Length: 502
Image 1 (cartoon, one colour):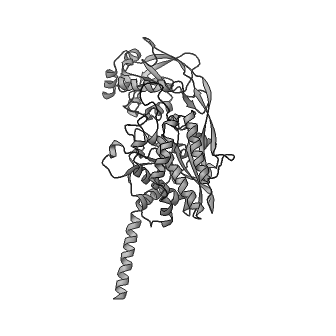
Image 2 (cartoon, one colour):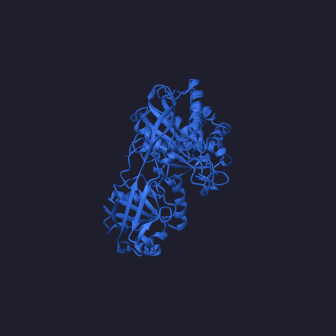
């Protein structure tokens, strides 16, 4: 009986082990849990209440509030005892340039177009005097719309889908790849054009780049539906009908004349870096990032003018600060990570991922030694799609370069945090192209595996109403714990993550 009982116990154990392995589970590490518990809602709230306060003035890149935020994060890293890795300091100077309000002229066959009334400009291109191009209609810029059209060397007008991204629009990218010289994009509605125009007015004298030279591409002109008569002598509805009837190539070409003149001024900002040296694998590096800049203040008006950016990305930044606290305490207790960890809050994300781009072009530690980037951008709120769901997080990019990283990410969550993983934005075909729109992209394009953690777009995105009192701190804590346990696993595993995709 004893033998049979023991045999049955062994069988039960093996069956349970097999089930655990099939679900990607592994045993909880009590040491990791001890330090994961140092991520607390009280610390997160205390730091965020400072970082996203009105005193920080919206943390706009290069402005006083951003520099105050950099000083606050630097002081936190110093207090923890992290190594100051930039010539003895915590801040990596980033040299950027602002473009002044460009001088722009646009003329159609029917006469001049008025800036902010008929069109607005998005880009940092420049012409040599006035250029005149043939203007053709490209529908929505799909392969089907363009199959009978030669766009090379021409200006191409397309219809933008509602709420389409300008920074990483697939149709615009495709047209440039096909050799289009200029893109003219019709907004879906006149109201949407008015909203974009208001935004462009704010940034027309403050666009930022890493270069004091004009962009190689000319950017794009955004126009409202009402401008279709001036550009094509036909209505926007008829252009839309040409798309639905698959008669895009039948729209009669027009012409457009334009000139763009830019000015550039230097702007000083910085990334904030804190380094924790590992033990036996210290030459390999885990980088944990967030962006600490935001979009600053509304230029004028009554009421609240400060875009506090509590979620975007104050939430990610205070999470990085707490992860740094947990890992440094582990090291002080003799339980430090095998691999080194770089905690980095970057500047200029809101201006085009510029701080992370600068770091990857001027790395403090070799990119060849960097095994992963875990990027946190907005993890403090619930989006409308999940208002009735269990605690969740959008996970983006984990499977793009390393199957091993994806499996580890799933396994870690199953073991410790049990969040609902939503991969909606990870789909390569997703129109929002979120994979290309936060700081992890600058590591991914250098073939470094990444995971991007995100809570989705909510009603307060890029508005003064993105305030600390709307942050769900228990949810923020749980998501930060997920990043901690994932980093702990990667930093302490025997083998470096395998890159099996390009």
